[in-house]
Image (cartoon, rainbow, N blue to C red; front, side, top):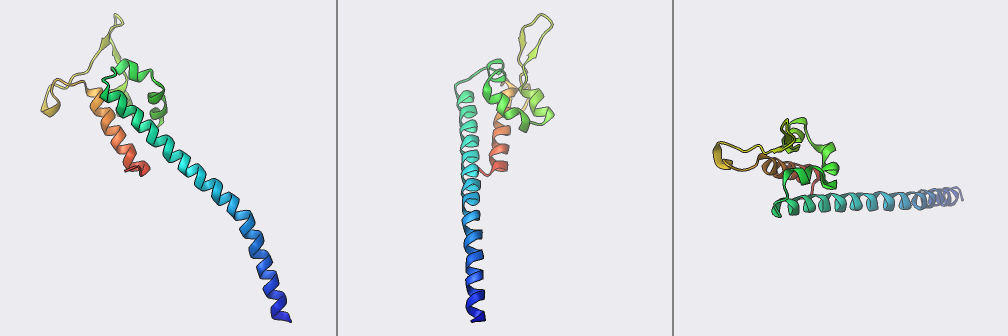
Length: 124
């Protein structure tokens, strides 16, 4: 009789824990899936902008940059931020040496940032 009572109590407690734990687990997994999907879409939109040749100023003012900004180091943010001369014109920073000579630095920094975030976020 004593074993029957303890079996019933244990079963009852397990049922309560299961009924309370499952919705929380479902919520946790749904949030994780949604976060991964948002991050994949963000990386995809940024890559698409690079492929389309979106200029530095346009990217800097985009929603995508604002979403990436918290994940950028100071050096990365500085390289992506457009430089403006004293007369208000945009100054492009061009690489003068190495394999990227003659290429605007911002797009290469952005590609590296996206690759780093993909690894960090486990999207690869």
